[in-house]
Amino acid sequence: QVQLVESGGGLVQAGGSLRLSCATSGRTVSSYPTGWFRQAPGKEREFVASITRNGNYIRHADSVKGRFTISRDNAKNTVYLQMNSLKPEDTAVYYCAARFRGGFDIATMDTLSDYDYWGPGTQVTVSS
Image (tube, rainbow, N blue to C red; front, side, top):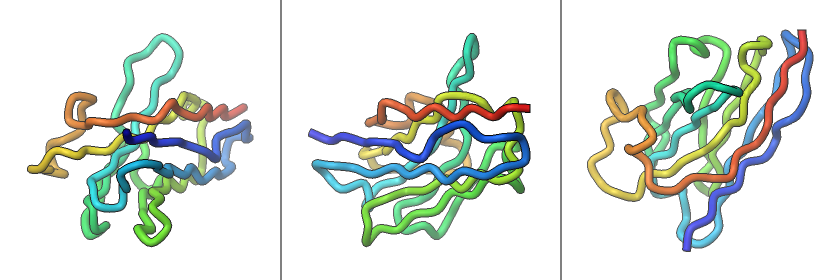
Protein backbone atom coordinates (compact mmCIF):
# COMPACT_ATOMS: atom_id res chain seq x y z
CA GLN A 1 0.00 0.00 0.00
CA VAL A 2 1.32 3.42 -0.95
CA GLN A 3 0.70 6.49 1.14
CA LEU A 4 1.69 10.02 0.23
CA VAL A 5 1.68 12.71 2.88
CA GLU A 6 2.02 16.43 2.28
CA SER A 7 3.36 18.86 4.86
CA GLY A 8 4.51 22.46 5.12
CA GLY A 9 1.23 24.25 4.53
CA GLY A 10 0.04 27.12 6.68
CA LEU A 11 -0.96 30.76 6.82
CA VAL A 12 1.33 33.32 5.21
CA GLN A 13 1.04 36.95 4.15
CA ALA A 14 1.05 37.93 0.51
CA GLY A 15 4.59 38.08 -0.80
CA GLY A 16 5.75 35.41 1.62
CA SER A 17 7.12 31.93 1.02
CA LEU A 18 6.35 28.36 1.97
CA ARG A 19 7.94 25.04 1.10
CA LEU A 20 5.70 22.03 0.78
CA SER A 21 7.01 18.49 1.13
CA CYS A 22 5.58 15.22 -0.15
CA ALA A 23 6.85 12.09 1.56
CA THR A 24 5.78 8.50 1.04
CA SER A 25 5.48 5.23 2.88
CA GLY A 26 5.18 1.85 1.29
CA ARG A 27 6.49 1.90 -2.26
CA THR A 28 9.01 4.65 -2.66
CA VAL A 29 7.97 7.65 -4.69
CA SER A 30 11.56 8.39 -5.56
CA SER A 31 11.34 6.17 -8.63
CA TYR A 32 8.19 7.71 -10.07
CA PRO A 33 7.06 10.94 -11.71
CA THR A 34 5.33 13.19 -9.22
CA GLY A 35 3.06 16.18 -9.50
CA TRP A 36 1.54 18.92 -7.37
CA PHE A 37 -2.06 20.01 -7.79
CA ARG A 38 -4.23 22.45 -5.87
CA GLN A 39 -7.91 23.01 -5.25
CA ALA A 40 -9.39 26.30 -4.14
CA PRO A 41 -12.87 26.49 -2.57
CA GLY A 42 -15.55 26.08 -5.19
CA LYS A 43 -13.06 25.32 -7.94
CA GLU A 44 -11.78 22.21 -9.66
CA ARG A 45 -8.44 20.70 -8.78
CA GLU A 46 -5.77 22.12 -11.06
CA PHE A 47 -2.26 21.23 -12.10
CA VAL A 48 0.58 23.17 -10.48
CA ALA A 49 3.84 21.39 -11.32
CA SER A 50 5.38 18.03 -12.18
CA ILE A 51 8.78 16.40 -12.15
CA THR A 52 10.24 13.31 -13.76
CA ARG A 53 11.50 10.48 -11.60
CA ASN A 54 15.14 11.53 -11.88
CA GLY A 55 14.38 15.24 -11.62
CA ASN A 56 15.87 16.02 -15.01
CA TYR A 57 12.69 17.58 -16.34
CA ILE A 58 10.21 19.83 -14.58
CA ARG A 59 7.11 21.69 -15.66
CA HIS A 60 5.07 24.45 -14.03
CA ALA A 61 1.65 25.88 -14.72
CA ASP A 62 1.69 29.36 -16.23
CA SER A 63 -0.03 30.75 -13.14
CA VAL A 64 2.93 29.83 -10.91
CA LYS A 65 5.85 29.99 -13.33
CA GLY A 66 8.66 32.09 -11.96
CA ARG A 67 7.29 31.90 -8.41
CA PHE A 68 7.04 28.17 -7.62
CA THR A 69 9.71 25.52 -8.10
CA ILE A 70 9.27 21.76 -7.92
CA SER A 71 12.26 19.61 -6.95
CA ARG A 72 13.01 16.23 -5.45
CA ASP A 73 15.53 14.54 -3.22
CA ASN A 74 15.33 10.84 -4.00
CA ALA A 75 17.72 9.98 -1.20
CA LYS A 76 15.09 11.37 1.19
CA ASN A 77 12.17 9.99 -0.80
CA THR A 78 10.66 13.47 -0.86
CA VAL A 79 9.34 15.87 -3.48
CA TYR A 80 9.20 19.59 -2.71
CA LEU A 81 7.28 22.62 -3.91
CA GLN A 82 9.02 25.89 -3.08
CA MET A 83 6.47 28.69 -3.25
CA ASN A 84 7.69 32.29 -3.32
CA SER A 85 5.91 35.62 -3.87
CA LEU A 86 2.67 34.05 -2.74
CA LYS A 87 -0.61 35.71 -3.69
CA PRO A 88 -4.07 35.45 -2.13
CA GLU A 89 -5.20 33.56 -5.23
CA ASP A 90 -2.71 30.82 -4.36
CA THR A 91 -4.91 29.92 -1.39
CA ALA A 92 -5.94 26.28 -1.81
CA VAL A 93 -5.46 22.76 -0.59
CA TYR A 94 -2.29 21.44 -2.20
CA TYR A 95 -1.99 17.77 -3.16
CA CYS A 96 0.92 15.69 -4.33
CA ALA A 97 0.38 12.75 -6.64
CA ALA A 98 2.56 9.98 -8.01
CA ARG A 99 2.29 8.11 -11.27
CA PHE A 100 3.20 4.43 -11.00
CA ARG A 101 2.22 3.49 -14.52
CA GLY A 102 4.83 3.81 -17.21
CA GLY A 103 4.88 6.15 -20.16
CA PHE A 104 5.07 9.52 -18.41
CA ASP A 105 5.06 12.48 -20.79
CA ILE A 106 5.80 15.60 -18.76
CA ALA A 107 4.65 17.85 -21.59
CA THR A 108 1.08 16.57 -21.56
CA MET A 109 0.34 14.80 -18.29
CA ASP A 110 -1.31 17.42 -16.14
CA THR A 111 -4.73 15.97 -15.35
CA LEU A 112 -5.94 14.03 -12.33
CA SER A 113 -6.31 10.81 -14.28
CA ASP A 114 -2.62 10.85 -15.21
CA TYR A 115 -1.65 10.03 -11.62
CA ASP A 116 -2.27 6.91 -9.53
CA TYR A 117 -1.80 7.83 -5.88
CA TRP A 118 -2.70 10.97 -4.01
CA GLY A 119 -1.96 12.47 -0.64
CA PRO A 120 -4.69 13.92 1.63
CA GLY A 121 -3.56 17.50 0.96
CA THR A 122 -2.21 20.41 2.98
CA GLN A 123 -3.90 23.79 3.34
CA VAL A 124 -2.14 26.93 2.15
CA THR A 125 -3.75 30.24 3.02
CA VAL A 126 -2.34 33.53 1.78
CA SER A 127 -3.66 36.67 3.43
CA SER A 128 -3.72 40.02 1.68
